[in-house]
Length: 280
Image 1: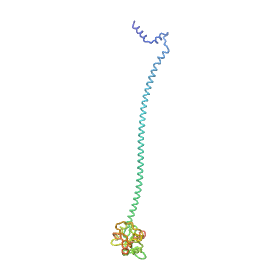
Image 2 (image 1 turned 60 degrees about the vertical axis):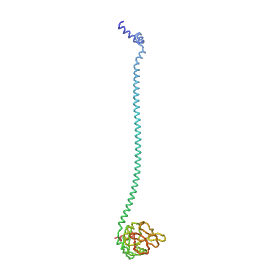
Image 3 (image 1 turned 30 degrees about the vertical axis):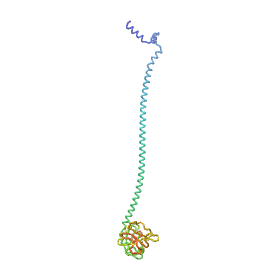
């Protein structure tokens, strides 16, 4: 057998039985059904491959979307946490602002109260300063007081809202009372320790009756205007109870003795009751 014959024989063996049958048919034509299977076998594999690739793409897309969604959820939680923190800080700041506003209101009220108290104290100090400034010797005061043609020719002084008349003539307590009345004055009533401190230096070397006597019926020391003795808590005051006792003033103390004793007198009158011409 030649080589050509062997090759041809091999080719015939490689063909399938169906192909041999096709070839054995008259005209050398092939069956239509078999031809369709061969024509559609390759597209089906392509479709399967395409679907596989599409599934892989879907899986990759789903994975990417899942990652993005997870990241978005994480970011949303972080944003919510930030918002909660900011909200808490806002409420804290708001509370602090409210507390500071309340404190400011309280301090403003305290300031207004303190300011009013300071203004009141300033007025009192100004009034006291004016009163002290008006305290002066008034040598012409006694000569200006006149009643029924009689001159009160002793010295006087003024302080604050009062003027004082010091007599040089000695009389008993009732006599001093009458002397003061004759000059349209009244026997001295001391209102407080400041007034006492002003008068005591002027009483140096003399003893002066003042308008204070013991009331036996009420068993109290009372001023000439029937007011109870008060307002003076100095340790230099010594007024034991005693019927028929009257008080006198010295440069060191206020004390009592029998009303029949003879001393000088201190009379007083408020400035608003005396003409301003008296103080020129």
